[in-house]
Structure formats: structure tokens, C-alpha cells
Image 1 (cartoon, rainbow, N blue to C red):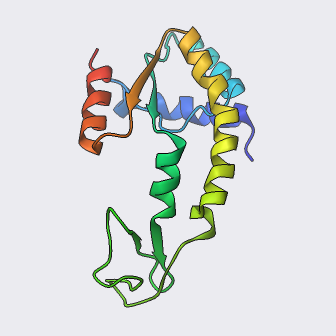
Image 2: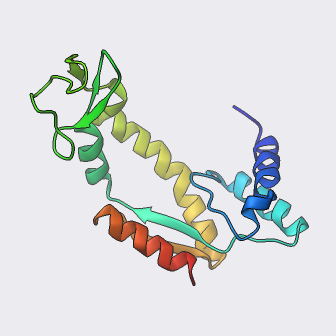
Image 3: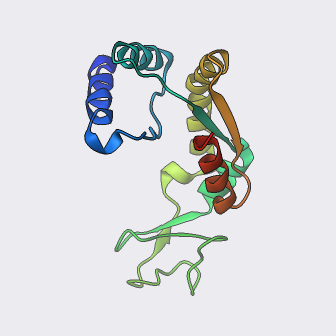
Length: 157
């Protein structure tokens, strides 16, 4: 684990690069209240602030179904999904003919445990950004192109 202060310093250094002059998107950061507070403080010292925090809402059941349908090839590492990106022959990799497995990380019981931790850490962050008046929610159960368009619309506000 890297200390929050170091991570925030790295993020701030990065977003101050020339290619971020017109804006940037942070994906998956901050993850905790201390990180959010440290980021807010560091940005404020530079005369900057976060415009939006976007929460892509997907019910746990959907996440479990998506992840438990993933399959990985033991030979080449290719990934598939039994519903959304199936192989031509069930259980056999299209690329190398290797066996496909359900990784331990994708098993429903593991996904549910990970989601529990996620909710413990994320709900306070959602509340933090709601209270700051910058949280925007997007329905993550619809087509990915619709999700993308909704996020683009928010960023264009």
C-alpha cells in the first residue's frame, strides 16, 4: 500500500501536465474519504477543484452475474463471457484451444465479499461528494454506449 499523501502528490503532478490543461478524468480515485480530502486540499492550493464525481450505478446482482460469467483461458489468458462474448465451442479458447476456467476472483461468493468491502469504502465517498454538491449518478445497467453518452453529457455541463 502506498500512503495517501504520495498517491495524491502523484495524481496532482500528473493532472498539472500540459495535456490535462483542458480537463481530465480520474477513474477509480479517490477511493476513500482521506484521499478525497487530501485531493481537495491539494487542488485548492493550486486554485483548482473537482467539477464532478460520477457514480455509475449497477446493482450487486448485475455485477455478480457479469463477473461470474467471465471465463479465462489457462493457456493464453484470453477472456470471454458466457453470455456477452462466448466462445465458438463451450469451454474452449477460440485463440489457442486452451481450457477456459472461472477464476477464483470471479466466483459469486468472492465477488459478493469484494462488493461488501467496496460498499463499506464507497458509500461514505458517495455521501462526501453528494454533500459537496458534485455527485452525478449514471445508470450502469443500460448499454455501454448510453452510459458513455450520459457521462459525456455530464462532463459537457
